[in-house]
Image (cartoon, helix red, strand yellow):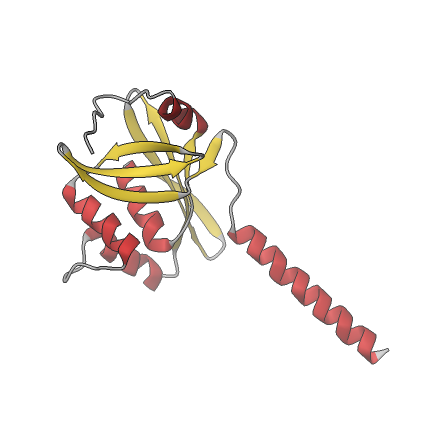
Length: 167
């Protein structure tokens, strides 16, 4: 009987761990797709963040500082002094906050970001620049989601706004 009780306790404990892991991996919101890879490239017109998912690539032009922050977070090569996203990451971690996910959308030829943060079981969504959301998601190792329609446009070769890239 004691062995059965021990086995039951272990089984319940394992199920609890499994449930916690499932909750830690957010499911893609409706109409959104999880980004598989993020890459920073320097083009003739400036730095570009490439979001790849489902064999499509979405280019997002960013300023050089943000590109450096994202590149540093991707490669582990940090700036000698903390950049804004490094500082924000450190502050948020110090107060037990984390980035849960980032969503990227396109409205009237402008990329928008939604940053979902959590602290002590409470979540809050914040409007942000897409590049800032991407940078913080990379720093925290959390998923980035894009609208499925953006991938459709990328597959068809449509580029939002004036995003003419020469790589």
